[in-house]
Length: 245
Image (tube, rainbow, N blue to C red; front, side, top):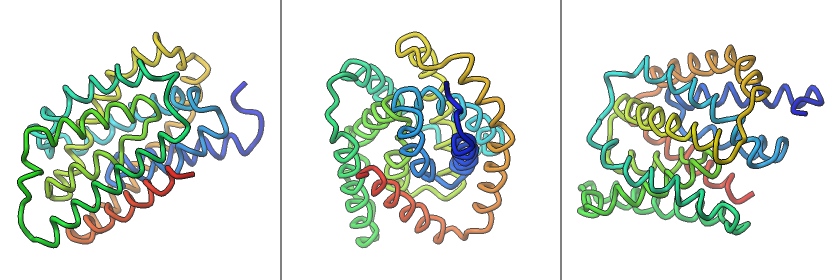
């Protein structure tokens, strides 16, 4: 049912590698794999196949960066993210074909605002407004439930908070650990897209997730602080571009 050709296996293992890398520091790179998985396995089935891989990789990331999270940002994001889950379920059958493009436009707008703030070299009052975090939390919860595609959304938010690279990765790791494990029951019992067959494929993919996580940790160590910020902005922009196709 799932794996009919050698290409299916290669795609699965490459996706597992990219997920491992994204969780330990190379944020947004998963967006390069999500469209390919959706095309190959189907949109909703691929979401169920990818989610347990994300959950396992989240554990690796949290174990390594467990003391580096800024919990005040996570707490601000989570309530709205949970609302985003149920909004996604409610409008699942009504989402227009252009949703991914709309999401990409929103990400680009966030990047433009963030870069404008960088140019001013001062903290914008908008970023500390009471409504700023809930907007990103809602959008993050919605997009992660629909297609595990919240990486770029969260990257824009955390970059706008000017977090150092290890705080950025640690905060992201904990946020997605909580969010992805909260999603599991909904994916299993509401959307019914996680099965014993898909879990078996997840287990087979574990070595590739571990290798990807090791690569991600290595790259974060090697990239300097300022260079890491630029790198994440570039990867986020590329991730948003992928959403147009």
